[in-house]
Image (cartoon, rainbow, N blue to C red; front, side, top):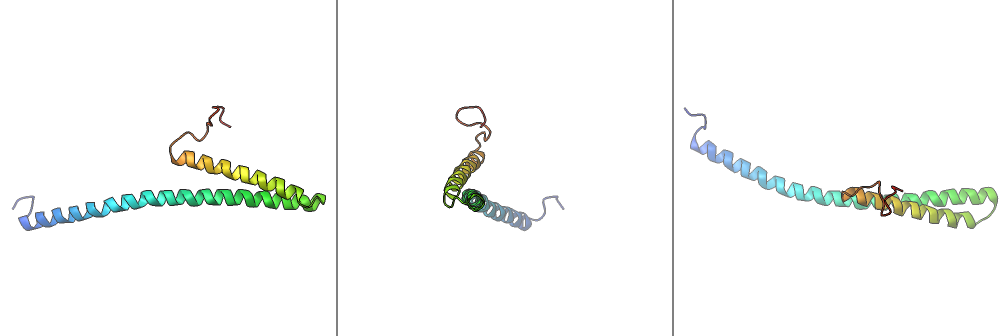
Length: 108
């Protein structure tokens, strides 16, 4: 008896391996799409949280100082800017660029 086994089992083994390979290829494609969806949700959440925190801080400061819409507007805009900055950093990390260096090269 040889190590390879009967021809029927060899054919069955080859068919099983072919089926496994055909199932792994769509999974790899699916994972790439999932990574893109995860990035999109992460960016949406980063932006939303930045705006929400800015609004909350502005609302608190307006209540503290009695300057009703001033700090809400300013801090919401600051939160928007911070959210966009975090979104851009996430995109750079995802696409393999250096997240620490901006276009001016000073890392800020």
